[in-house]
Length: 152
Length: 81
Image 1 (spheres, each protein chain N blue to C red):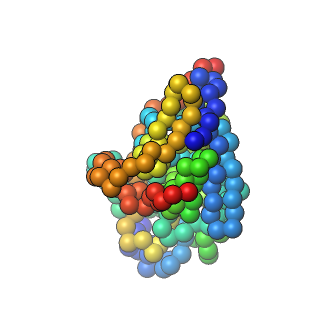
Image 2: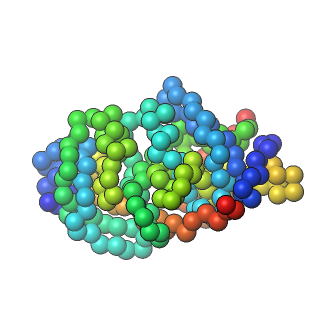
């Protein structure tokens, strides 16, 4: 079980990214069921010390004014929030809001793939034990089948 | 320049480019023509270029046969100020 941080009237979590020999923590990531894809600020790419690879995909955001920088969709070896983790999930890295700094959004892709239950009464989240039938759902194809749902 | 031409000129490298011709279909932008800004020797240099990119600039490996950009609509976070 993970204790979420409720502030600015939003839910926040600390996310740990592991890639190669690097392990970094991204604090104040908003848990956002309104985001279909998890995104982390580009700044953390430098901290992770990752290279651009031939498998990296291109993403373009639209819908707001201001500067619109492209994002990159990258497969990361491990993403973890407390005891909830996924391996080899594709995460977008980019600028989230052109008007203010946001470290990242934990999107529905992570929450669904990891089988997360969000308890808004106790302000916690935890992993639900799920069966194989769950995977027939509408998980984004880019991340389907990549989840590690094994026991921690 | 077409992506095919880019691949022939700069095989197995990373390039920084702007899109000059594309078709948008079902949430994806299929890129036909690009304007090359820079060619990078490896993934490390390519990442540096990505971090310092300007609006409308993309970095991609010429190992990829096609350039397809996933379009994401941003609505914004509503929070207290």
